[in-house]
Image 1 (tube, rainbow over the protein chains, first blue to last red):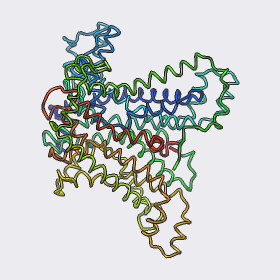
Image 2 (image 1 turned 45 degrees about the vertical axis):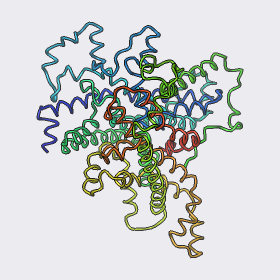
Image 3 (image 1 turned 90 degrees about the vertical axis):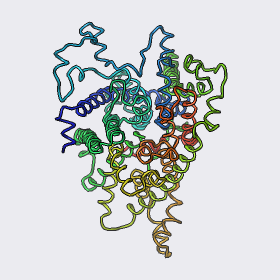
Image 4 (image 1 turned 90 degrees about the horizontal axis):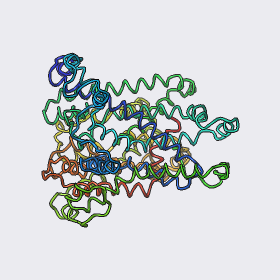
Length: 311
Length: 297
């Protein structure tokens, strides 16, 4: 229990670090999950356009990053986001001076607040700095993801969207052509057809993708290990990475395991929320006699896909 | 097993709208989007390859140019010439991938068969336990894994790298699903002819299971080749480094020696090649693997 105390009530450095990781990962999830879901759905809809030739080539191209090693990909991203790297060179062509990605600890919300002239980053409002919640100043809680964290987010969106695109693609091919064409004949526009025909049909897949996204994004580790080791100023530290360093650099296995267990609970809660949201659907769909067996199967299939996504 | 085939045969595309309905605009727009995203998804690999042939200085100053000038194989010579223990990493990756792939195919198919066909007490709870195991996120288990390997006295050895990966719940599940989808009539015939359980499994069932076995082989190879966190906690000796762990150490500067991006990019590139080749040959299987059951889920 002492380990959990250290994480939640002691007010020491460990608690501050743990709360920082929760903040970092929360913003990470908040941005990565919607982005990867929307991008994946968009790509799937484009690749699903039957009048385009060479679709299987593009499908493979989009999926390719998902099958490569996360370590190898992180090296490439580390290179292209260097201060003098390819991304900044590209931005320079458009007359934009790119940030020093991996050294920039400023949070996006902080930057935004400074832009609109509400606060001065060098001199943050004392009321927010002095007031702490769960061991971390309010000012830190509202920082938003740091610029450095953005590189990891971009990498994550880039590698996972291909896998999710394939799932959406499978779902889109089950969307009845007749209904879509009927809607077209009735004069429904492109957006209306998407909203009232496509979206309801792929809803289960959409939920699945979001859940898998939520679960996967809470586990981010490899990319942090390679690209930033938690820095700058601990703004890319995640619970998984903190658990690892606590255990293997500081040899505090108890604290490390406690962090891991909290992470496990967060992920379980995400899964249960998804189950709860999908509950009515499942109940209606499954036949009574087969219920238990089918549910077991369906759960396992979701897990299976999830594992492949996290690889 | 749900085979999902995206390359629709021509006759299925008959009810697509006539070309005349579509303006040029839609056509060009569609391709513009596809090409743009193909660039976004593939260009980093192009940058990676071209920069691995640059000098350190040029890679730092001019990362975007595709043509290395001067063209330099220094990074590759360094990598393959022994200034980093690349041969050791390669050897370890191959050993582990071979054992893990072979082990998973062998044990997962046997376990999957037992769970789908043999009748024994506790079969359902065992199936449930396997599914539950799949639900535990990997990063949560790093410390327990380390402590167990230590306790068994095999930490920092090849068995520590191989044994925990040699059987996996998702592989068992794929095989179980497959065996449940085929009719048991052939096996019954074999049994009547006097074949035992293992004989039936080996000579009658496995040959039929080829499609599932290929999918499982590919996924196992890809998984073990790309594995990183497990090796991070299971070993410490540099002589047991795999490609992923070696490249990670090289990149995070644990092996010393500053930027050296061409070298790192070249090493990462080699680590990508085997999965890339497997992917290109078996694209369709990957698609199928990723979608296993997604249509029902």
